[in-house]
Length: 388
Ligand SMILES: Cc1ncc(COP(=O)(O)O)c(C=O)c1O
Image 1 (cartoon, rainbow, N blue to C red):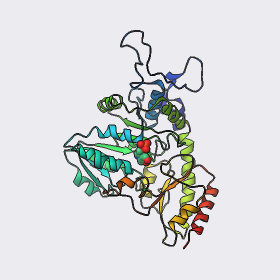
Image 2 (cartoon, helix red, strand yellow):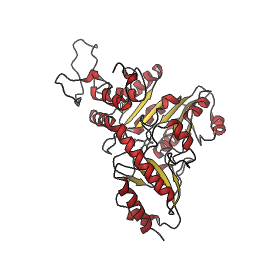
Image 3 (cartoon, rainbow, N blue to C red):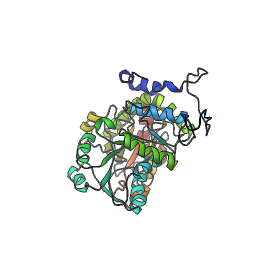
Image 4 (tube, protein in one colour):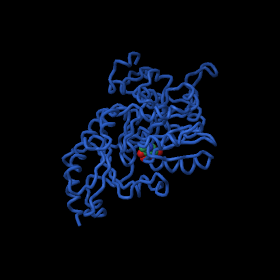
C-alpha cells in the first residue's frame, strides 16, 4: 500500500500489505502454521523460525501499525503478543530497578496488580495518581521516571485525559508516555497523533471483536525503542499464535463498521440511562453533559461502546442482575455481544486493596451490536423489576 496516505481507515484495514498475496490467488491471506522455514542460503532467509516471525502474525502487525498512523509500517510494525497482559509486561521490562513508573489511578485491574506487585518487587517505584490533576502528576515525575501509563477512556470510570497536555508534561522529563488504547482502537483515537510514545492494546477486546481470541499488541515510533521491544517480544517468547493472529487480522477488516455501531448503540443507551429515574450517574463520553465531553470531542472520532453508571438506592442490585436477559454478566469487553459487570468484584477484584481500586458500586457495560431498541427495553424492564 505505497500510497497509504490517501486511503481511508477502512481501506487501510483491508489493504495494508500486498506482500502476502499467495500464488494461488486466494483473495484472503492463508493461515501459516509452520514453525520453521526452508532457507536457500544459511542465515539469509526472510523467514527463519516461528517465534521470530510468521507471515500471518506479520500481516496483523503491519496492518495495525498502518492503522495507528505509522507510515513505515513494514519496518516499524506492531508486536503481537499472547495476551494484553503480555503486551503490558514487555513494556514494563523497560523499567529497571531504581526507575519509577507513574500510572493513572483508574486502569484495568490486572495492570494495577501487575505493577503494584510484580514490578514493585523488582525494585521499581510505582505511583498512582489522577492525571486530571496535572500538578499531582508533575510532582511524581523526576529524572528517574521511565514510564507514565495512561488509559483514556479510563477503566472503569470512563475518565478522559487530554493526551497532548499529558504528553507535554511528561516530556519535560526523559520519560515515555504509554497509552493503553484497548477501549479506543485506532478507529476512535490514534494516540501517536497526541504525543504518546508507546501504544498497547488487549486485542482480546474490540480488535478481535468476537470474544474468541486472546492477544495483545505493542507499537512505538522510535526505531531504537522498536529494536528493544522486538528483543523482548521474540526472546521473551510470549508471541501471539498464528491462529490468534489470523482471527485478529480478520477482526481488523470489520473494526471500523463495528466501532461505528457500538458507538451509536452506546450513545442511545447512555441517553436512555441519563433520563432514567433509576440511575444516579451515567458516565459516557458522548453525552454533552459529561464532565470530559470536550476532551472527547477533541480526541475521539467516535465515543465508543463503553460506559459505566451508578444505580439509585431504590434499585436492588441482585434483583437487577437476575432480571437482565440480553446483557450477560461477564468480564471482558469489545465483543459483538453486550456484557455487563461490577468491576470492583470482577475485572478489578485484584485492585481492591490498592490506591487504584474501582468504586464499590460502579457498573460497567460493553454495548454490543444487538438492536438498540431491544437493549433499551431489556434494561428498562430489569430496572423496573429490581425496584425496592
Ligand atoms: C484496558 C485493558 N487493558 C489490558 C487488559 C489485559 O488484556 P488480556 O486480558 O488480553 O491479557 C484488559 C483486559 O481486560 C483491559 O481491559
